[in-house]
Structure formats: structure tokens, C-alpha cells
Amino acid sequence: MRKPQTLFVSLAAGSLAISTLLAVPSAAQQVEIGSAATVVGKVNISNAKITKPRKIERRQRIAWGDLIGTGKKSQLQILLLDRSTFGIGARSSLRIDRFVYDPNEGRSFFATFFKGAMRFFSGRQDGANSGEIETPAGRIGIRGTALDLLVGKEAEDIAQDEEFVGKVDSDKGEATLVILRGPGAGTAGGLNPGLVEVEGGGNRGARSARSCRLYPPCRRRANRAFLHF
Amino acid sequence: MPQFPRKFLAWASLACVSLASAPLYAETLQELEALSDLSFDETAGIAAARAQANQGGYLEALATLERVLAVHPKSHEARLIHAIYLCKIDDRRGGLVEISKLKKKHYSKELLAESRAMCEPAKEG
Image (cartoon, rainbow over all chains, first blue to last red; front, top):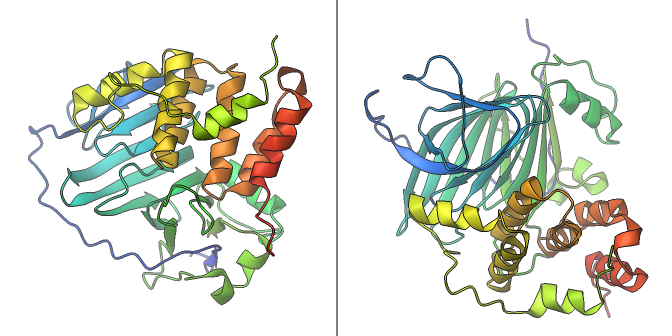
């Protein structure tokens, strides 16, 4: 039985309605959505066709459903069609389940991050852009954001050093640390402030803070959320 | 190892780098690949990041710099600009942490001081 969920959210986290559920193409159809912009070390790819993980090469196209795994001291950056990027650190695992981009309308995606460390940067700012990342501990909705995400023991270790989290008893495989890097209210370049909504896996009623004023922990530590069971 | 001059900051924040052939606003897979190719050359990658930043695209500039740093992890220039751009998107804490980790022998005191100052919140009044 799961322990009651604890959710700490800080900085501006907005309600983000992610409702884009588009028709899933047939298994034979490969929907290419980006490419491997940088590859360092051992990075593997697998999918419905490539059942045995295969080493990924720089410039390799990334498609819906590709499962990316990195080894020790390895990293990858995926550059997507709207120029958003997923940076994946060592010993990490990510799958981009769905990515839809229309230059005239905007972008939406759904990805699953299983373990490790990743960084997401939004690309084109115009249009309606949204995204969701599923983690073992819950779902993160993002918009116009620079976001770091850690899943696993490292997340717990770092979170415990954070004043606003303190000592927690969590499943090391599921502990999830979300760090909203920006853009903040004082951003340059006319960027829209980043928005994040964190929703626990067992609690469909999203608990999100719309501003620091509404959620006290962020007064002490900005830009961080920690999920654990 | 040469230190970066103070005017480097002006370049980082103001210089408009002409990259006529660089597909900074790529929207096809081929253009994306050309964009990522830029990062293989440290100078071209940093110039591309500056050009993106000059257009207000700080998030894309940060991503470009991270590609440069993946290939050129010892690029002191890319590290400093990365820290400054974090501050530009209002991640001042992150930017200052990165500046504090820079090896001082590669940068002048004035440059580091100016960089830190850029990361401090604007004083009111």
C-alpha cells in the first residue's frame, strides 16, 4: 500500500490543461520528430521494431515510441522539430510517446521519463505549446520552460539537502525532483514565464500552486518540487 | 591559457552575430541536423547561441551551448555564457552557482565580477 503522497511545489506553477490526444499511428508508421543532436558515450535506442537496444548515432532520427537509454558517463541531446530539446544524462531512460508540431498552431508532447536526469528546454515560443512528462511518481505538465527532472535515488539525495523537503522516506526508484529553472518573472528576451504543474500518480486531483504567495514552501526555495511515495 | 577580456561581456550580450547560412530557426529535420552540426565547431556553436540570444531565444541559446559543451567540455567561453544566460532567464541562483564553479585562472577578475553583477537582482529605487 502506498504511503500518503507528499507534494512540494514552488515558484509559478500553473494549471495546464493537456488534452491533446491524437490518433496513434499504426505500428508500421514511423513518425519522426527530431534527431540526436549530440551523443556522448553509450546511448541506445529501442522501439517496436528494434527490440534489442541498438547504439544510437548522432543525427539519428528520433520517432514516436523510441526508448532511449544512456549508460554511465553518457549523455544525449534530442533536438525536436519546434527546436525544443531533451537533454538526457547518464544512466537515464526516456521515451517520447507522442510529439505533435504544427508551425502555425504550436506543439504538444507526451513523454515518459523512467529514471536518471534530464533537462528540457522549450523551443519556439509562439503558438500554443504544452507538454506532459510521466514519471514513476507522477505527471508533470509544462509550458514554456527550462526544466530539470531527476528520478531515482539521486533525486531523493538532493531533495533531502533541500531545506523545504528535509528527511523523507520514499521509494528510491520513484522519488522525483522537479526543478523549474525558468524563465522567471524577471526574464530577459520577452519570454513567457515557465509554468509547471505537478500531479501525483495516485492522486488525479492536481495539486498545483499558482504562485509563491499561494504556496509557502516556495518562499524558501524557489523552483523546486519533490514527489515521493 | 588566455583570459577572456572584459569586452567579452559586451559581445555576449550585445553583439549581433551574422550567421546567414546558419539555420537558427530550423523547422525541418534536415535543418535541425544542420543546426546541431554547428555545435561541433566551438566558435560557430557559440556564435549561434549568441545570435539566438540576441533574438530573445535564451532557452534555445542555452540548449545550443549545452550541445557545444557536450562536444567541447573545456570551452570556458561557453561555460561563462551559459551561466549568464541562465541569469537572463531569471535562474539567478543557477547562474551564480555556475559562475562560482568556473576556474578563475581562465577569466579576469573584472569579467567574473561583471558576470556576477549581471546575475544580481536589479536594485529598486
